[in-house]
Every structure is written in C-alpha cells, then in structure tokens.
Image 1 (cartoon, rainbow over the protein chains, first blue to last red):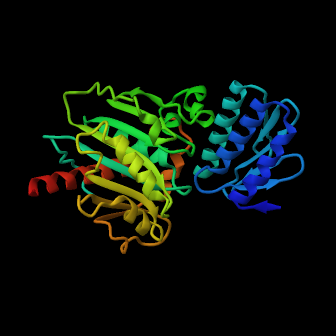
Image 2: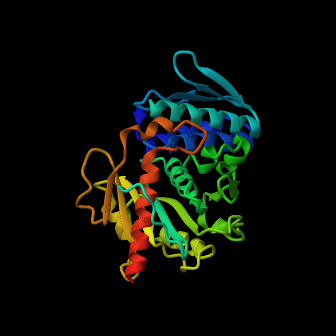
Image 3: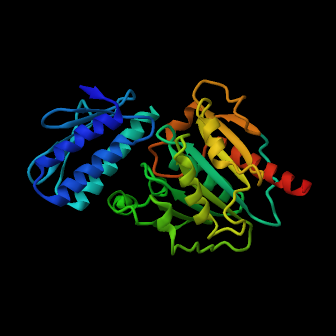
Length: 107
Length: 232
C-alpha cells in the first residue's frame, strides 16, 4: 500500500533489519531517508522484500535489502540496477537516483 | 523587473534565500542566484544550511563522494570556491559551521553574503532561524541580520514563514517568489514575482542555472537595497 512520506518511511526503514551489518543498515536508512525528502514529494510503498519510491513525474526507484548488501533499481522500462555494498557504492547509487529524480521532475 | 543593476557599491549586502521545505529545490535556486550575482562582478559567499538533497555541491559539479558525504555525517561541511568569485559552504546543521572561515578571494569588489535554508512555516522554524542568524554573524558585519529576505513558497505558506524570519525592529526587505498557481499579492511582501514554470528544466544539469529569471531577481533585490540605503 502506498503511503505519505512520514508514515511510509517508518515502514521502509524497518526493512533495514534484513541487513546483517551495521554499516549497511546505516547506508540503507540514509538512502531511504534522503530519497523520501527529495523536493516536491515522493511516494513510498513498502513490501516484505523491497521499498518502492515514485512520483507523479515518472520517478521510480526500488530498493531491495539482502544480508550483506542492497540493490537499487533506477527507472521503470529498462531499470539500471546497482549493488550497494560499500560507502563508494552508496554515493554512486544515491547520485544516480538523485539525477533520475531531477531529470523526471524537469520533464 | 529591471535588468540593470544598481548594486550597493560602498558596502556589500547580506541576503537570505528561504525556500519552503519539501516543495522547492533550494540548491538550484541558491546556485542560480549566486551565479547571477557573481556575473555582475560581485564577490559572493554562499552558505547553505539544510538537510535535503540536492545540495549546492550537485550544481557546482562536485564529485558524488564529496557532495554526498553530509548524508552519512551531518557534521561535514562541503566547501570550496568556484569561478567567477563564489566561495561556498554547505552543511546540514548550522551549528557545524563553527570553525568555518570564508576565504573571500575577491576582495576588490563588494561581497554579497547569501544564506540559503528551508522553513516549513511552523513554530519550530524560529530555532532554525536563530541558528542560521548566529552563523551568519560570523561572516558578516551586520550581526547576522539580513538586508533582504527572498522567500520562495506557495502563497498559502508564505505568511508564517515571513513571521519566522522578520524581526520587525530591523526592517528587512521581503521579496516573495510565488510557486504554484495562486497569486501572492496578499503575502505582505514588498515585492512579488511568479516562479517561471520552465525553471525545472535545468534541475538535473550539474551546473549553475543561467535562467534570466535569476539575473532579473537579484538585480531587483540589489537595486531596492541600494535605494533603501540612499534614503537612510
């Protein structure tokens, strides 16, 4: 079920428990928290296995936590999937997610 | 708006750019205004206080591992300089600016101090405004009080934001850039401008926007500040 940001973010962050490393939980929480705060509003849907972010402008990203990493899939038709298993991966994934959001918002 | 600038020549100016939280792209607006000011030959010190992405690092072309570091550590300051004559610093918590000193490499021209931050139009805003003012006082001789405040917000949200930033005793000039479809004519601001629909088209570009809107806006703000000073 899709929900507004504050309520939806709480449910999304609960999925961090699927990650066994503290650093990865921190990256996952930071990633979801910042994407949820992109300007103009982003909807959040949390399923048992992933968090989906979208907006009216066509922005779509899903985040799937596994034991030691999480996957970020950006876009809908031909999504680009990134593995986040380190701090450098985190920066790359958030940077591309932000760019995708800004491109959609500008169209 | 008048395109010609009558910038204050005897002194610089201190301007706040306040955007409605969660609604406006603060960094895009701040980058556009700072480049428009620098394009007039003025030195610019831009301080960005706030949490949401993007931050000004995105628009100043800084690599991801640098401009995104504050996401993982909110005490980190992303700072540097960029041509023409802009010193910048961005941090998620105003308190973290302790220890930061603007280099002010462009000393042969008036310096404009810009502080960009977000408010939501709630009672909790006042503490944030106090923290911003305290940090601004460290880089500006005016005790951290702005000469002018540019507020970018919906017509329905601007009134409580004005209430949070304006100190009635110091007479800041208020400019309201209205986003959304409603008119801002009842906002109480001294000057009101509509935010152009097309401004979002450059949101994703990793460079400061050069839309004529920003040039017109800052020209007008400087002109009104100058006229106010001459009248005093």
